[in-house]
Image (cartoon, rainbow, N blue to C red; front, side, top):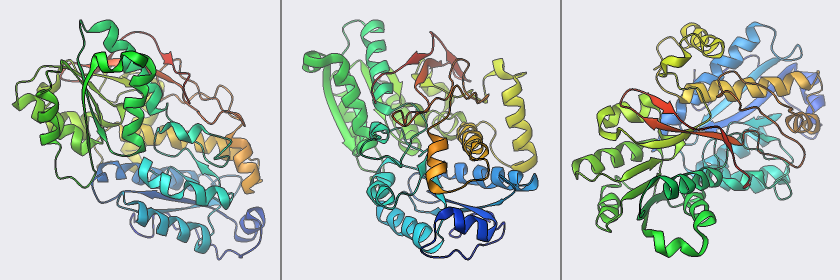
Length: 399
């Protein structure tokens, strides 16, 4: 059962305080993976990732686990609240003695724990946030992101806006934390000294705010003809509805973390955002061009068997499946040595690893000095039913 205690009880290891991780793993016969996601709170829609990971590690256990060891996946609900994340991570590291952390979700929540886990030298892998700071391998040698950075994503949007919009007047709506702030920073990277010439208004919101309606109205009153929104799904749906209700027709650009068809576009009203632009690195489950795709067929078969009641239009499940495939590869490369040092070394040794639920041309590469597994994105446009990709995969260079 997913919840406070988490997911799979593949055999709960006692753990021995003070012994190296490898010794604990050998003694217990399990690999303990720790995770926090918001099963509740303002970002609860992302909680489905934890459900998929529980099912995926369960599937692995059915086939012998990893290196002959069962996986104990302990996933806790932090409610997208940084103080709760700190409490949960301390429990996972100090009481549960997990071998590593995987997929901890959220920029503000990971920001609250990153110094602690790096001091403790706990692998903090494939964090579910694209904040640019996770690529800072010198400051955070035990932390690694997964998706392309938000700052790189924003650079791509800025270049697109400058090419596609005549006389752009840009308004930016962003979450007031390191996630949201990466977007105006990326736009500034491109505009430089021309920032004031093209950006007419910015507005931020807090995750505790009930709505972003007033912020959207403020941005509309600025005379902007472009709206870039760096928001989580709850507020993305609100922003789409508010723009529609005001009959405002800007060039609408949305962060790729808030474009799931099942989680955002349908609840907002799929007709209300036709023409919206975003980016992608995942194959969209609603895109008919993937109907016979081998990678998406594997994903659909997995969903049908292990999560049959889940919303198969929610791209969060595709993201979680892709991350699970990648951590499975890391565990394979460990070759039975699940010390923290070796787990981190293998995470830093992914070379042209192909995950078939990622867009063609996007391969996973890491090294000791490259903690950005995914660097490519492709522009895409909402047509009312699905996202249509256009242009080529673009690789960012900003960390």
